[in-house]
Image (cartoon, rainbow, N blue to C red):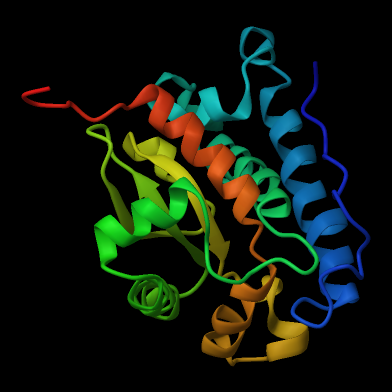
Length: 213
């Protein structure tokens, strides 16, 4: 079945004032819509790849024919990244994390404030378009990374627990060139319940070795 643009889980205006209505319409309908359209177009002459999920395609890009690899990397990545992005935000979200993600952040970074500072800093320093992530490693540990363009940690063998989009189209209408301001405001709409769901998926596949137990 052809890849499809998922509906937003809320109204275009639901994330105001952090993300403005016009940005949500353009970002979801036009940008994400184009990634889906271009991914489907790239796969047209390879029917055997059409049943694969976008995650599976970008997990092993070397298995994708060379003539469409770039298109799948960019558009498959864009589709996977944005499908996650809409879900990990919600109206009246934010606040301090709770549940398992709070414990993971505390263990890896000391406290939430220090984690936020490091995450935002990585987002500011990502040159040009890209994403900043909290990614899980095979042993069950987590790290902050940034990726260029629509690259996803999955292509590096990591698990994307959550990430923020630092392409200019994600924030420029409201924040102009003030990326740090956008990164700081974004925490007010994070959906920690969905982040915990994603963490659970990661942990179920990558249980840390419990030595001596």
